Image (cartoon, rainbow, N blue to C red; front, side, top):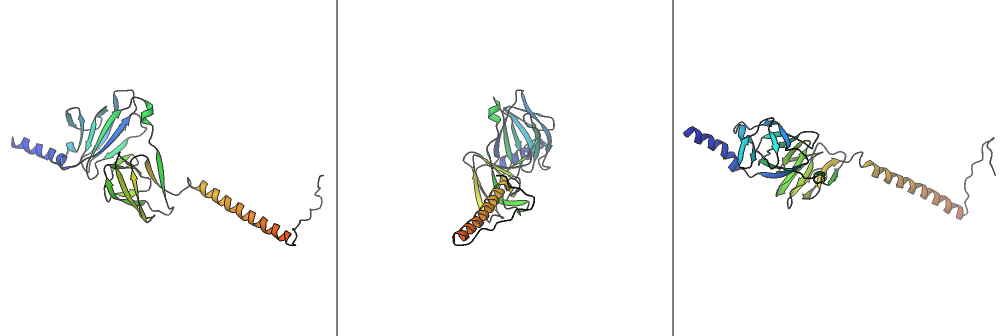
Amino acid sequence: MLIVLFIAVVVSAPVSAQTYQNIEMTVDTGGSSLGEIVSVTTVPEIGSYSVTITRGTEVFPVSAGDSIEDGDILVLQRGAYADVSLSDRPSSQMFGGGTDGLAVLFKKSGSSSDSVDEQVKTVYLPADTGHEAGRVDSVGGSCYIQRGDRILPATVGEIILVGDRISCDEGSQVTIEFSSLGSARTFSSGPVWAIERENSETEPAGAIMSLFDEIGKKASEIWETVTGFLSGGKFDTAEPDEGVGVRG
């Protein structure tokens, strides 16, 4: 009896001590299974209950090969990871418990229109920005960092890397201090924000500005020539080369 009680305390203590970040994943599929667990990284102090699935009133530890069904809640303790393959995505997605734990609700979409990607906007940093773009200064509510196939809860002090994407739940916001900008920016619910360096994607705008500069220089040269002529000067003319004819 004492052994059973001890196990119950060990398993439930981390769960009750954490306030989870929550995200919702919508999967567009016609099948009953939304996906499956590819791999799980547990926390040694907690063991198999580091990553669990809540299905109705049942809670069970997750292992590779377990299916994801509509309404399942994947719960990760702090420091735990789960790699999940979803039916409507070409590659698996890594979820991490971060420092506060993470709960992911999986829902089945009734139509493909519901699975359209959220609007993505881009924050461009100077081209000489290093791999580390900044750090999370403050968080109000639930916001997330998508890093490749991993989704991490945004927490104060978390490093933001070039290539990360930032998103927030409704009514939530996160403030990130960007060292290369020398200032902070606040992101709220709505679009997903991609953090990128200025690169080839921004070069067309630069090329257009360069073109305008060249046009401006040419216009200035022409104007100087015209004003010089009007003030008594003359245009320089080039003599045609021998053998070159002028057709009338």
